[in-house]
Length: 256
Image (cartoon, rainbow, N blue to C red; front, side, top):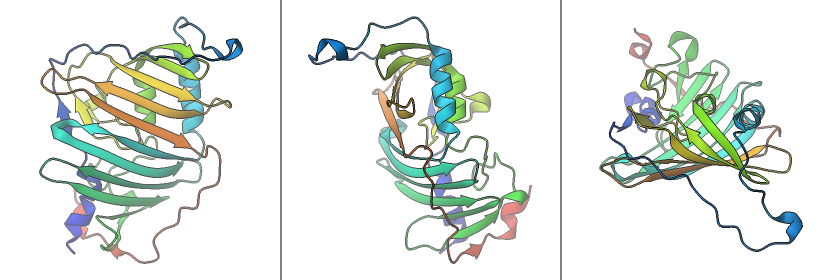
């Protein structure tokens, strides 16, 4: 196995571009089924952005698991699963991109300042010393501040309304700082340029944990893209350990 192949595995989903000229998307709506009077969802409320941001930040701040499924530009689809504990500095993810000419799959485990990546279950894990690379290195870097894109997404929210007992809808700005992808949350891979605010739907549970984040992007020259991230096991301990065996990354990956 070539080391370059394994180290590029997690970078294969990055940089899918949606350019300017996108049409304005329609705010998502929900059709509620008949239910007892005491369970009927309330009418949309005034902007509750601060309330929603607090729920997102609280959910990001504890250990949790997540899964991602949705559509990407260029006719591609993404599926991902992972777990993240910022306090214990433990992270694990597997991302699969299908469709298009270059389907890809990659896995990554990060424990503190040690990162391990591989392209498939049959490949060797490749170890990267994160103290020797920049966090924004697209191929081997890792940013503990926001590895899933949740913080960037939260900061991008421009409006939010409560549309159900556990449901919020609103709009976010998909243009990231320095064109850094942050959607879908959990598998950041879509870069947008000059796109207007786009719709999202977020669901919480009875404890206020965020359980689902659905976002929509509508380019002018292609079909609507919809991705959904689900979150679970908030605050529960995670068992994420470094692989038992790995090979060291080549020295040239550490050069500026």
